[in-house]
Length: 494
Image 1 (tube, rainbow, N blue to C red):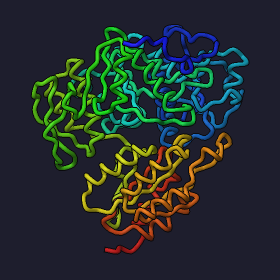
Image 2: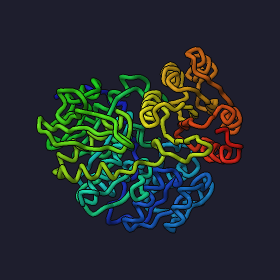
Image 3: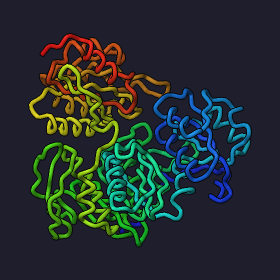
Image 4: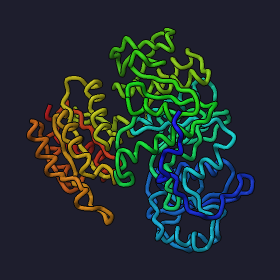
């Protein structure tokens, strides 16, 4: 094991502020940006734990606004200092808040207790639980959801917080009654006053790293900077803990040198402790034979396509076997996994066109999504519809990766990325050059300024039998619904 003191402290910066109350003394919490997926789930967790909860957002929009209303959690529309009157016992500040945000500034200037999202989760939900943390550049949400479903199917009732909505139960969080709490461990920073990656708050008993590839170019200066965050995560696993690593990713495997606990590996590599062999396509997904430290555990069926989803599944099987879950229960859990919203989610089919919604916004995720769609719908045209929306996805560092990824589709329709106040032109992706490169590869490609402007050329291109794979980490102007409505309204071409 390497000495963690060899690493710089760039990812350990935290600014002084009042300490968070003990779980027993906290009475109420206020969440800034409460309608976000993560913050809305945190609001639900806090309320389920018995705390009074309220919050604010720039605007209250479904589905989270509807969910919060159903829970009876008050939401103030618009950010104002007076929203914090009366003063709450805790103000949860999302990492989108700057120091000058009107509510964050008011809380700081009036010495209200401010906590980051991951700090709040760790303080009020992980202290007395067995923490199972899923980290990695790609696959975190799917892997976390799979693990939650496997543990629930085995009757263990874990607590969990997932960065998406699971189809099984239509949930993204629960306190649970069992010993485990499953967390999606994000490497993004925690808050303006806490520059630590979120996953450093969670102190895993079992940590998983699915993959490592440079991402979040808006907060990480370089690949080495990004790598160091994961080294810190590996080092946060205690001596009695377990670090579970993807054996097919050399960068992930290198993390074993920074781990204080024991290491288990998974993947397709012959050297992996938990591995899949005899892999074949099956109706609605794939099947494989599972080997664990040389023992043949039989055939498993997975209702998901793509090798990346097989790798995610091997990760949760490694965790579950370590936690003592029965093999038969694991086999049954995979068969009944219904997936996650916005991960290869079929939103509908009209006029012979299947419309798929996916969260992919990194070139590698785009490539994996399209490869899985090829496996799921062999012989059909794949039409990629993409919104480069996130701070990282709009940057020039990923342009070549997008060009290569989208050349594997039969057509590309892309919206122009928004230019924001903190963007530098030199860092910004040239979407027109990207489109021209994709065209030169022989793939039809078009660009427009918005989802609405993309709709007409997209509808002119779509034909019965096509699969429209819509990829964005945001709402993309409701384009999924608009495409389906337009397909239903037009005369059939079949």
